Length: 274
Length: 281
Ligand SMILES: Nc1ncnc2c1ncn2[C@@H]1O[C@H](COP(=O)(O)OP(=O)(O)OP(=O)(O)O)[C@@H](O)[C@H]1O
Ligand SMILES: [Mg+2]
Image 1 (cartoon, rainbow over the protein chains, first blue to last red):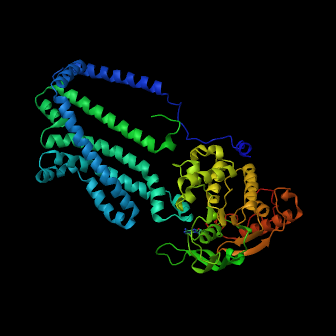
Image 2: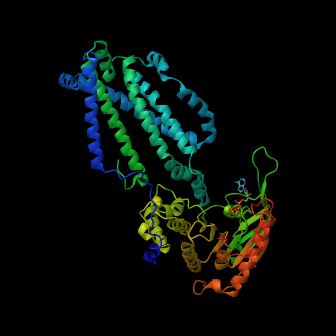
């Protein structure tokens, strides 16, 4: 019976795809081509602007070899990554449960919401002097600056994700005798996941920005510190090496989060690739 | 539990929906009384807005009557796996596979994972979806999704099955197959089924009893017994004389209600036209 019945529904609905299917090989070819194009534009601009303002890609590469050899780049990268990861992980570890809590307890959420919005609208660089007073110029202060940069978007997204849960699914679970806790865990939480991952991505980019900001404002260390040293002494080739490393870290972080997102949202991406 | 206690009794139930800060609300149901015997298949029919869904939600215990009383098996209803609810929209969780969607009901009541999966496969077999156990809902057609939703309600072997226009979104052919499927399941696994439908045809084919409701406020207009012999998939019910007369009678009454309802968009319209077979579906 099963086989015969299924033949009545040969049409299987899938997510509509816009344009032709992405092939992994093709997209990588395009990415490499654009990379070389960007290098070309950079080189052209360097030639036009003069290398006191903008080093050529080749000069940058030479500088990169030098700073890698003397170890300063690696130490700085390690320092920055430590600050970034610690701050980001702490902000996620705080914001996700807190956002879930706000969504789960409506009265609490509605009360806190106004303050959360006020806080997230405030330019958080304004807090840096205060943070320095309390936490000094070391790692604690830096990690905290990263934390306050990333925490709000994660918190707000998580909260929104819980609030936007599918009321019909909630009713379905309730009609089958689901308790509040079960409904929260099995309906609201999975429903909020796409929001949470979106929040994590925004949070990660803000965390990276704040890592550099923190290193510029507090004890000059890490990649931000190198930026400040090279920038002030007009060593533009070295300066650009640091910029490139920051860009690479940014790409790597985003790609990791995207992978994580695809793993969690398996159903949405079935049959597609990153 | 004796048979009398296992039935459903609705006594003088009224329900009004009010918005905050409004004194007058919409009266969805007014003084509705019903007596549903064990092992009967009851259909609720009536024009849109006559409170069919509201009544079903009250039978499940999701909402409570303002006045009157509902007893399911002798006690006021409490939502739970013993009250299978099939909704008009499929309400599958997009992030779960079909198997995990189907076993959701027994997962809530704490069945362990192994047993759950076996049970889900059994019921997926029953609705002909075994091959799609590992698919996600967005990979299924509408008819398949509705069968998955049916399996999810059946997996807990409910004593009461509440169905809100479950086949409304299916094409005519799939719909007839699903009707037969439902009749067979019901035959093997006797229980009370309360089935809401807009299709008079479907109500007559499936039910032992049809409750016709009148809108604004929702009231019971008529209760009819359907005396066609079971099992009904063995012969063509629609050819039978009783089917034709009952169908015509119900259709006439609904048409009159709609034509007499000033709030209906079909008010005062087309009272004389003969129904085309299946046109009301
Ligand atoms: N949650 C609610 N809040 C406010 N009014 C409601 C609510 N649910 C139902 N109503 C009102 O109660 C009346 C009956 O609604 P109900 O959904 O029970 O009708 P129905 O018979 O199921 O209609 P349909 O056949 O179109 O599904 C309608 O007028 C509707 O507007
Ligand atoms: Mg309805």
